[in-house]
Image (tube, rainbow, N blue to C red; front, top):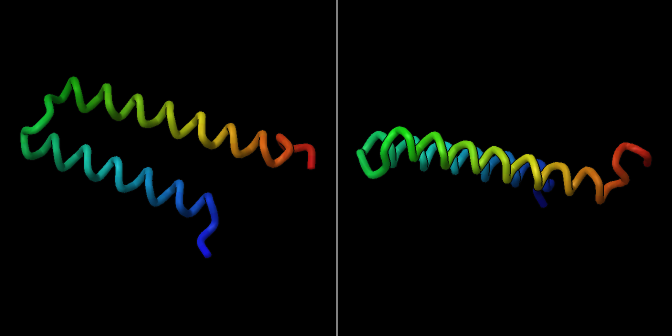
Length: 60
């Protein structure tokens, strides 16, 4: 079974590729691409922080 870190990294990679493809095909504007990428990065940070805190926050 894959680890949560591998699943998170795989999902993040797929999101970036999908957004890049949508921008390349002209489905979203460059400004919207930047907004979506920033939102995805923020969401990923929140997920990673939550997992880290659930695991003890570096204290065990």
